[in-house]
Length: 339
Image (cartoon, rainbow, N blue to C red):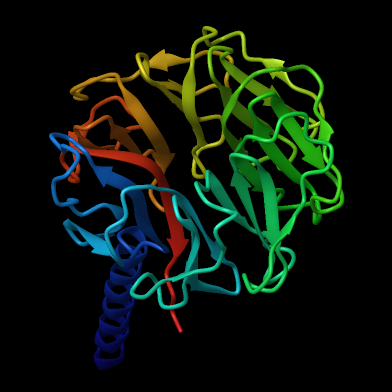
C-alpha cells in the first residue's frame, strides 16, 4: 500500500506539472514587441507645440513614446542579428537606434530626406535599403556610406521596398509607375509584367515565399505567384484605392486589406472572397493594418485621427487600443531580445 500511494502521488504531481506547463505555453509571453509609427494630429494647428509623435511601443496596457518627438516617421525595420538595432524612415533621413529606441542617430545627409520606406537586408548584414521621392539608396556598412541604386526605374518616386526573405539579392520596389524587381541586390531594376499603377504597399506571404500582394492607388489589389515577376488584379476586390495588406501568419488563407473609405476587408479563403469587417470601428478611413504574429486572429488597425483599434477575431469585432487622435502609418513587430 505505501508503494501504491507513493505511485499515485507521483502521478498526481506529474499531471499537475504538465497542466502548469501547458498553461504557460498557452498564455506565454509574446515573442515580438509591437511598435507603431504615428503622429498625434487631431486638433493640431501649425504653430502649436508638437504633441508626442514618432515611434511608439506597446508596453503593457499603454503606448510608450520612444525617442524624440518627430511628426513624420513612416516605417521601421530592424537588424536580424540584433533586434535592438532599429532603422526608421523619417522626414529628415534614415535614423538608427542601437538600444531599442532610447537613443537615435541620423545616418543620411541633406540629399536623402523625406524617406518613404526602409528595409534591412536579412541576407547581408549591414545592408539597408531606403525608398525616396527621387529613387532608391542603400548602405552596405550600417549607414556609414550610401549609394544610389536605381538604374532601370522609369520614375523615381519609390513608396515601398522589400527584400525577399527566401531569395538573397532579390528585391521588390513599388513606385509611382508600378512594381519593379531586382535580382542583383538593387544593381539593376526591371519592370514587372501585368500592372501599371501607383503602389502603396507590398507584402510577402509567410506561408508561400513566391506569393506576394500589393495595394495600389485606384487600381485595386494585385497578386503575384511567381515572386513578383508578373502580377494580376484580384477580382474579389473592387478597383479602389487600398493602403495596406497583411497575411495572418497563424492561419493559412487569411488575408486582410484596408482602404480609405472601405475600412477593413478580410478573406478566409486565400483571397477568393473578401468580406467587410468594420463592426466597432468609428470610421472606415483606415491607414494601416497588421496581423499579430504571436496571437491567432489578432488584427490591429490605425483609424484616421481616431485611435488604434484591435480585434481578436480577425476583424469581426473591434475595440479601441489607445493612441487617441493619431494617424498610424505603420505597425511593426520586432523580436523580443532574450539575451
